Structures are given as C-alpha cells and as structure tokens.
Length: 80
Image (cartoon, rainbow, N blue to C red; front, side):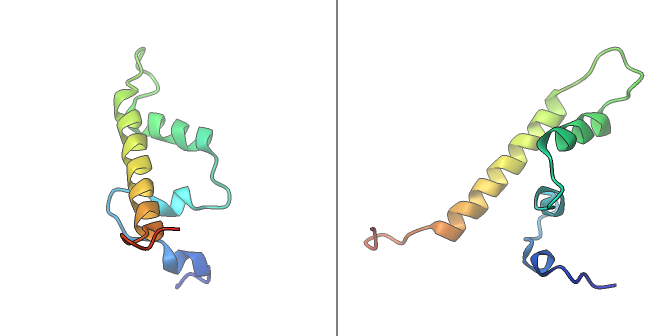
C-alpha cells in the first residue's frame, strides 16, 4: 500500500540514515536515543555500551547537516 503522506515522498533514501523516524511528527530525541541503546545492548548485561549508539547519532547528525547544506548552498558570487 502506498503512503498518502506527501512528506514520505520527499524523504531522501539512505541505507544508513533513518529519515522516516527522524522526520516523524511523533519523534522525540529521548525515545530515539533509548531505542538506539536498546538495539545495541542486551538489557540483562551489567554494562551498557554507549559507543555504538553515539556513533549512530553522530552519523545521523552529519547526514542531516549534509542534506541541509546541499539544500541551502549559495553558489559563489551570489551572496546576500
């Protein structure tokens, strides 16, 4: 079934960045961070590895920044 959300058609495709989650109207940073921690750790372990979730968040931030830069890039010589 095709999505009726007009935003869904504009979501960039990237095998690593989860734009659907990041652009969801119900997105909350704390819930997203918690899901990343739970997906990379076993809740029964006594030690929690935060390196992998932190790297994932860093990647997502860098990718979003790259996308923003590509959308608002002003060509040389055409400054304000």
